Image (cartoon, rainbow, N blue to C red; front, side, top):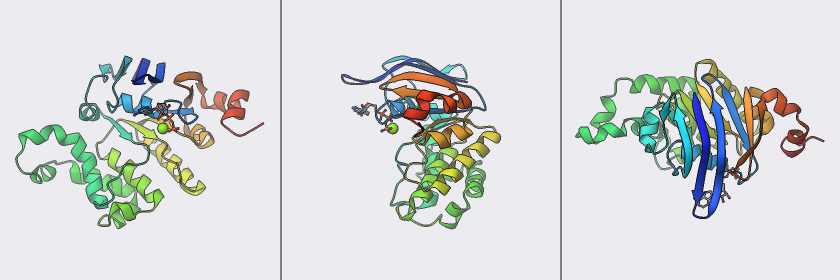
Length: 250
Ligand SMILES: Nc1ncnc2c1ncn2[C@@H]1O[C@H](COP(=O)(O)OP(=O)(O)OP(=O)(O)O)[C@@H](O)[C@H]1O
Ligand SMILES: [Mg+2]
């Protein structure tokens, strides 16, 4: 269970997340919706230690995550697919994927000598790489190609694959469908539903509320740093306010 309790995130005098509480139970897909600037990315980043927690608590399976460094958070089984994908364009697809594993094993670096040797001493590495290639055959075809030459949709696959290289139990995704054509948005949501069926727990930040609520069990809506609505996907899809503000319906 992910439990976020009264979370505050602040950038100087900008109060981006204000006392937000939410939970994600094992095996759930929960979506976090809201307009630009609502604080969604700040919440995800604070959860994985990429921004400091100014107040409140974040815990995962009973363990406090706030005040852990990002690589410690990754070791607890939590991985983030960041906004804007953040792939390394001048490295190959394969090396980008190996970096997902690097994040996971960075804590071991100081114990090991060679800059390369540690990669190959990780017995599960090849297996995880093969799993990612099974999920995304396109990445396998393109494994030797520079990541920057991938299409937008392929870069999203790479960002997701990289996070999966850490073998997370909880996957946080920040707008994975942004900029993708409708069929790729469907593919992305289909993949997330499949990963959940394989046992992953998912917190999904999305602009495309329709697409997210189709696969989500529950959702939360943020406005200017606060949660203003929450409910089952069905409740949110039928709420008048949601339909007007986020679903483009009368
Ligand atoms: N590093 C930062 N320094 C200062 N202000 C920031 C920083 N990051 C975010 N903010 C501000 O915090 C608020 C919340 O931003 P955040 O990126 O969390 O929103 P968001 O809901 O993810 O928006 P979007 O849908 O556009 O991605 C915004 O007003 C933003 O300008
Ligand atoms: Mg954002």
